[in-house]
Image 1 (spheres, rainbow, N blue to C red):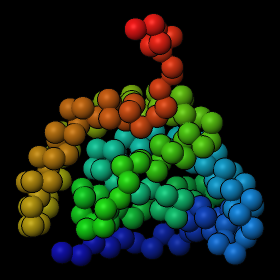
Image 2 (cartoon, rainbow, N blue to C red; image 1 turned 90 degrees about the vertical axis):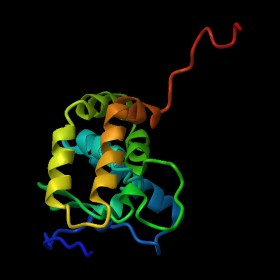
Image 3 (cartoon, one colour; image 1 turned 45 degrees about the horizontal axis):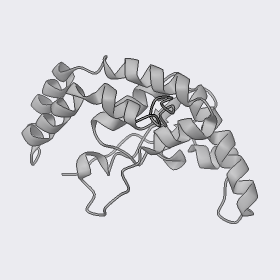
Length: 169
């Protein structure tokens, strides 16, 4: 099975901010932080983060977000549902960008809220549409199960405040 998308012809965020591997490391860090702040400003970011967590698409990096200065497109889901054979660190990169931006509290709260809007009905409809796929029922079951605990999974991607009573015991 192959997947494709329409070429939306706008640059990814790395291109948009002028990031290049040839830049000095300190300049790359500055540009990554600027791009993270830009991602934090997108209204769709919390929903994208929750959806990525639901389908276990942890590799949402700056090269997978397209932006033309107005519209944003979220692309590259090849690692979703553990489809990629290469092991990956269990880090939701979109959540890491939110932390880098300094907007983690706002985005975490909005992503938790967004997680409650993701419906198992949509998962069942996707399964029905994709029923010719290799294991659409298996994937649908995995995603439906993840939806039940999605708010907690999203919250776990962000640093927790220290518990003042933690050291007493």
